[in-house]
Image 1 (cartoon, rainbow, N blue to C red):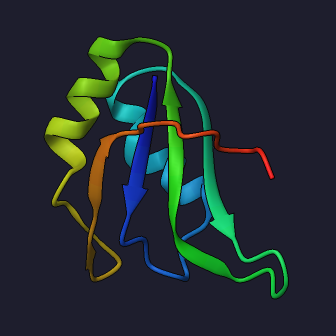
Image 2 (cartoon, helix red, strand yellow):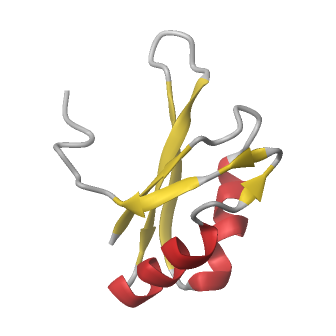
Length: 85
């Protein structure tokens, strides 16, 4: 189950993103999306959980959490062809 994570601090690493979400279940992946031209983070990313229950727990607790001064926005990803292009 994939979650969209928005309003990420631009200094956040994928390791830190994993650490934020790992208490809520088994993470399959955690990715911060970067600009293809500059390589800089775009301020959002995705995390994949093993189960829907774990993903829902993460949304419940992490949505609105302040990380490095920014309030995260977390919800279920609508997966509109991510990774294609």
